[in-house]
Image (cartoon, rainbow, N blue to C red; front, side, top):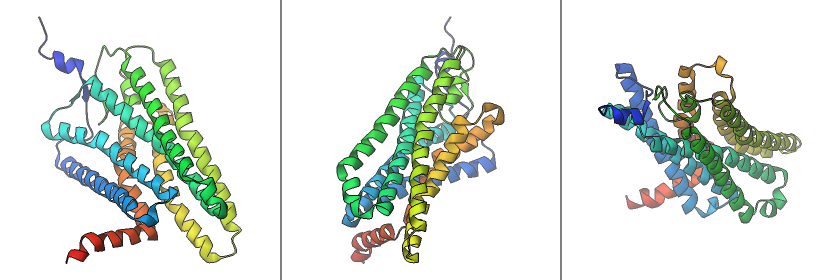
Length: 313
């Protein structure tokens, strides 16, 4: 006789981030607000960079790609989580789970390399300003951006395919609010030692190599800035780079904790909180950090508002 719960046994169960207490309803409302703010902020950033000719530079092109990745990242996670919470459902199909893993790793991995490309851009702009048009030309910028997307995509495809290839013959309850490879692998009823080692190697390649390039770039930038005679030039260089470093610190710090910190020092609750930070909060902070601390972006926003809104009054 066929079991009535056959469909739920095939699907995975996401236990989620919130329950239905008053506090959690408030927190859920905050997450939805942050999600919408992130979408609007990153969309506006892409729009400003596209419309303002002064922002048609390699640095802002890379920034527009970062905003695009952030928009896609929150859209991969939050709508499904919100739908499950509001409708009282918790299931996600294997295909949906695989899609989340693939997109999350593609976007997360792509962003790692994109931040390294942005660090190289700042290094060239500050340390070799006269050669900037040659060393950071449009062709190289496109190659670095394409490479970031492709490397992230390859990592996502391999890990999503390998994760779903394991047999899941016992509990299919994922103690998380989205399908993340480490959380899913814990449920496999097969030996996953080799795959976990493989994931760790991928983390080294996707996290530590770009981070090493970023740190090397900023070490050279710091040395160059300290040798500048003009205090105004030093302040401008520090202001430009501090925004990028803030984004790097937020993004890499949480990812390294979740993917490279030993399991014995972590709990599932900690994993959820850290995951929420880089999937929900970081994408909304990026446009804020770059717009609030950037005169050119604020100028572009002012012109856009005058053209589309104030000009009609």
